[in-house]
Length: 372
Ligand SMILES: Cc1ncc(COP(=O)(O)O)c(C=O)c1O
Image (cartoon, rainbow, N blue to C red; front, side):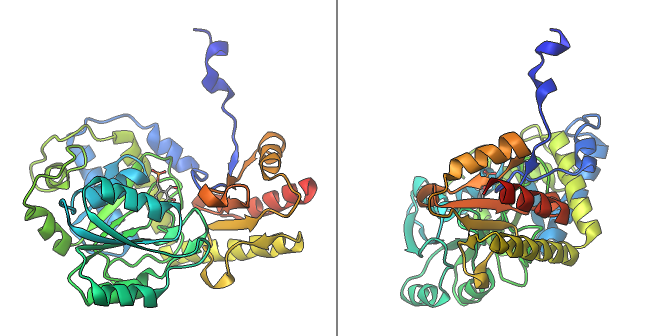
């Protein structure tokens, strides 16, 4: 095959300002292209151990069981439910967007007795409604999404965590969009099970999902009455590959994706978590100020807006898809459309990780100024 026929030659650099994937730092691309080691090679095991420690630091936890699962954020979500749910377990899910709905679907497929509280999309989970529910019913798991990417809302994980701590429930949190872009304090907030994804504020390509599990949750896993009903995501087996002196093969680890995750976490921790959070906030404010000057309105109230995912109301009479198409074709910028009931009503502008730089904010504002 001649070079001309290789379609990869025509992959262009697009400024990724959607809901993920985000821009990837050169050092992460370099890490991916390093020589592939054997998945049981002693040097690779050193890298695995270092990644576990980085995940602990990023999640602010001392949880022993902290590791990257093979697969995207949804694999992290499946892992977090499939290992801890047994048929008929009562589970409470707090829903205010697409990813809360996905959690419900995952838990129902496992035969859990799923109860949910739904909140209006674009508004946060209301702690008082959760309190009232927890006073009535005992659940094995209470689950919620921290940063609801479909709407741009931050949910009050810390406050719900305080309520769950007063019960016997395990607290399960989705931090796919929040990790690396805003405070996520696993130990401080009493989170038992948490997962994230690589392609948002970690600025790594999609394909790997950091997960962390408290000792309390691990005890539930080890005392299950039935086998974990999914072989690939069974943490009780995967532990034997990620922990201990002697490592046992489970599945072939995605070696180069683990290099990439290592490098992206290295970059984040080198910048400092608090500095990265401040950078997300500053650029978010810059973007919102610029959008408002263009006469655009934010979908979410300022009190619960995510810094890394900005939902913007599509003005009346504007063809939202046509604007996205022009951004992609003429300006080489990707932004996101609305999901589910938000389709056609909002644009989603991501400021995640490496994307979250003032120059990129200026690029999108100037492109929108020209188009609108
Ligand atoms: C909050 C949240 N949870 C879960 C997912 C699923 O992750 P993935 O698409 O990487 O499987 C996403 C993806 O956008 C997300 O934003």
